[in-house]
Every structure is written in structure tokens, then in C-alpha cells.
Length: 411
Image 1 (spheres, one colour):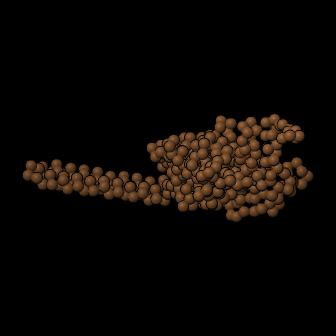
Image 2: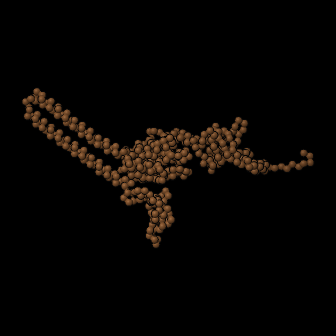
Image 3: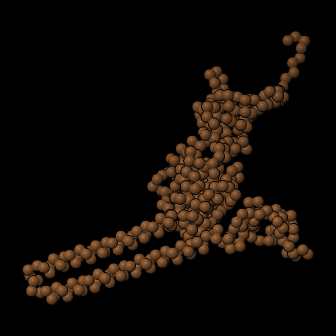
């Protein structure tokens, strides 16, 4: 135009100015965009790149690794999502795009979608295959438990096992069972039990809760730790209607922690009854064989060929009677000895019960969720809980060894 001097700008200057203009608009710095995912790609750096589109337009999007690592599900092409983020300009490409920091699937919850995605993935890899399931030991002597030491689940589980099979020794590996730190805690507890010699079976237990509460047992790290465990694992998570990924990977699923105790431990009362029944049936069977043999012998003695051998037959009959009496006497003695052994075994098992140990004057000292076995870990003012043979007591540390006042605990 005549008389007007135009001021030129470089491409970089113009792009920077447009970028500043976009970023100065507060409405564009926290925006929700709904659309269909296309051209989705997870880069080796961990960043996500994709496009949101509808019938007439498309929007390039990026989600940096710090946000992508927190996604509970994996976006897929064709899925409709709601993306939250800020609009800015990528200067090198000269294109505006959405920098997303939150993605929500539409039509299905994020956790439910993540559950189905991981379930399908692990099923394809064979982690749920029935042929890889390990059988449970019939009479386990050492049972490992992964659970919270303060929940109702562990109390129910211990009660059932000690009642049914008091000969078993229980080893608890305490773990968090809820929250973002629970999954690594469960994996660590599984590893600790595998390092203990003699453990024959592991039970993972937690009470009921919402999908969010039970989510640590749907984490891939927990599933792979269970799969890699060389010992049989029972998953007892939630109530009967709750299913987790851990249930599918474990060698056996129990609908509740109490049911896990019944599946893991045989009933010693039933075993005693079966043993007594077996001894009785053995005695009846042998007595029947003796009677049958006596009848055959009597029939043979009355045969024509033996009519002149009455004396020989009489001697054989006397010998048979003697053997029968000796056999009946021996069987009676065996049954009597077996019953005595059962009574002694039962008494020994009762003495091995953890509850019996507490009743003899021992106690368990806990600070919060930690079992205290070393006085050097205590400090004055600590609140403690004592678990006794009958009931519990709350205490406070007033002094420690080395103090002037030697009294250690006060109710």
C-alpha cells in the first residue's frame, strides 16, 4: 500500500507470538476434549502420541511420560475418550496440539478397562493355563501367609487353620493390601516367604472392598510374581463375588480367607475318624477271612476222602482255632495301640498351638503394625499393644534399660 511501510517478521517470531497468544488464553490451558483415538503410539521414551478426531476435525495430542506412567489403561485406536490438558503450539512443526495430562475412557471405567486389558494380555501369554497349576500339599507342615497383620482376614485365616490342622506352623509376611504402595509390598512379601526354608504353601489374603480397594491384586507385577512362585499359591482376596487378576494366576482361588484355610489345611478330626474306621474295617475283613477259611476247612474235612482222617482234621481244626484267636488278639492290640498313639499325637498338637504358647504367659508386643522383638527399637513414650493369652492391653513406654527408673511398661 502507498505510503505505508510494512514490518516483516520471521517465521520463528510469528510462531512464538502465536504460541504466546494461545498460552495466554486461560480457557485453553485447562480444556476437556472429547474424540476418537487414532494413530496411537507409545514411544520408547514413554511419551504417548495420538490424534483425537470427530466427523470434521482432528487434533494432535501428546502425553508426556510422567503422566502416561500413571494411566491405569492403555488407549487404543477407535476408542472414544475424554482428554484433559492444555493447548500450545509445537514451534518446530508449526502445529498447535493438546498436551494431555489426564485421559478417561467413555462408556467404560478406566479401572474396568485396565482389568480387561491385562486379563486378556496375561491369558494370551498362558499365565492362566490350567496345566501349569500346581497341586496343594495334602498335609502341609509350614504355611506362608501374605496379608495385613492387623486385618480381620488374617485372624479368620489363623483361626480356621489352627482349629483344623494345629500341626502346621504359620509364617506371616506382612504386606500392605491397599493403596499405591501395596503392589510392591505384596511382591516383596512373596519373595521373603520363598526364601524361608520348608514353606510348602502360600496364601495371599485380604478382606472385601471396592474395585479400587482391591486394585493392588490386579497389578501386573503381582500377577507375574505369583506366576513365577515355585510354591503353590492360594488367592483369597475379597468376598465370593470379587474376582481379581491374582485369582486367575494363582494355583487355586478361595472365595474368602476363611475358605482358604479350609482348602489349605486338612481336618484332623476327620482324619482321626477315618483312621479308626480303617482299622475297624481291617479287623472285620480279617475276621471274615478267618471264618471263611474255617468253613472251607470244615467242608474239606467232611469230604469222603478225609473221613478216615478224622484225627488229622481235628488237629488242623485246633491249629486253625489257635491262629484265629492269635490273629484276633493281635488285631485288638494293634487297634488299642493305634488309639493310644492318636491320643498322644492330639495332645502333642495341642501343645504346639500358638494360642497355647500365649496361655503359658507369653505375649506379643506390637507398635502400630510392627511386632517388637528388640527393646533397642523402642523409645520412651511409644504406645504399645500387648496380645495376651486372654485379651489385649494398651501400654506406654516410660523407661528403657539404662534409665534410672527400671520399670519398662505401665498399663
